[in-house]
Length: 414
Image (tube, rainbow, N blue to C red):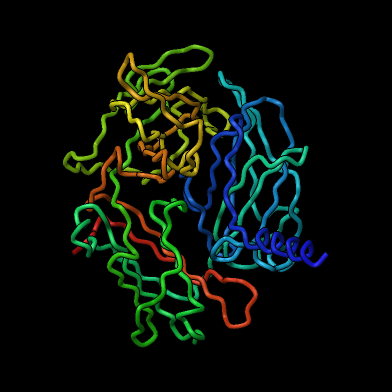
């Protein structure tokens, strides 16, 4: 009996301490985007009190009911012990009331929009990490997305340097931090202050929990040689489908079948080639359409065809990668080698707009992501870095997100 009880407690502890993982949507749910102070689809990091807007399309034309649930998490994405009433004013697990059907499009879809605060959920009360999960009317989880809410209690200075490791000085970028605590007296900051560094809105490659190396007055200094270094990657490729009837940037030709088909120019591997600067959205996307006043319901979907000139790889799988699906590695974006054309190819539906993407490889033996295997890694690459600073006072019950800083490597220095 004691052994059974011990096993139950162990399993319960594993469940409680399990890290939250975003769930990718089924094929009929597309174009998930958060919006607050930007029109681009990207990682939402909101100031406490700012509205959160989540939008997505359902392509099955059933006008289904969807419900949302909001949960609070610790800095390491383990569930916090706060009761729902402590971090949420009002109710969740409510139906998304606002949706509209597409108008004058080949692809029929319903566009859903959730804004918080609303009548049922009147606001979020605490800073920190959150996850919103969307369920259908049968209580089946459709997808989930992470977001963060911060309060400006400290100043976070961010600067980007070339790597201090001479072995990868041409391929990596290092991020230096200075957290100014102002007049706040933090207890034991080496243990109570946590940091997360995010490159290009991609939580999958974030560096977490670096400790301050030393303090100067009221400033915590982080100047690591290797621990805060990211692979530089390369600028994202892009295409535009705002006009479905003619070829746009990156589109070689179009065709009309059941829906419009957009065939992109064949790309080549860029690893090992000289670096070339091209402005991009650092992996993000933006829905746009030449015709129609309301792109939410008047922008159409096109079948986008990707192709990569690359010899067949026996030990790696290649995927299309970008924030259009929250940088997820999923079967929908996996490319397959076409022996007749000599290219890796894949096609899937995307809403009209401007999209960034790149090709990445997954090692079949280690399942490791190799972002630079196809695109290359260059210290000159323009990348966006966001830094989140968390604090949990001695005896506190949750991690506050107390500071947010941001920098670009456009002004990288040695």
